Image (cartoon, rainbow, N blue to C red):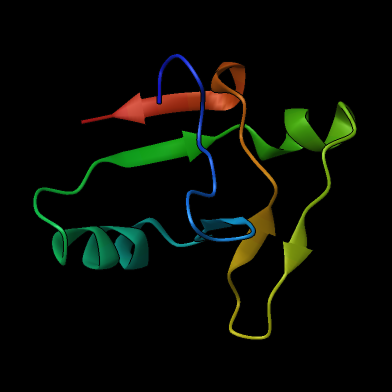
Amino acid sequence: IREKGLLPGSREHVHLSPDPLAAEKVGRRYGKPVIIKIKADEMHRAGHQFYLSENGIWLTKLVPPEYLTMQI
């Protein structure tokens, strides 16, 4: 993640939660959660597109590493 950023893997988009508590809850399903803050405002100003899904999750094609802030 630190080298390549967030990639969609087998999905079409990277899924981003606007709520850190909800993100942590989802992360606990897969082990110890790590919350990664996204500098979405900087991404948007640089021309990256975001889409809001019907269930309130933000989608984007990828998140380059320069827009990530790791919190462990």
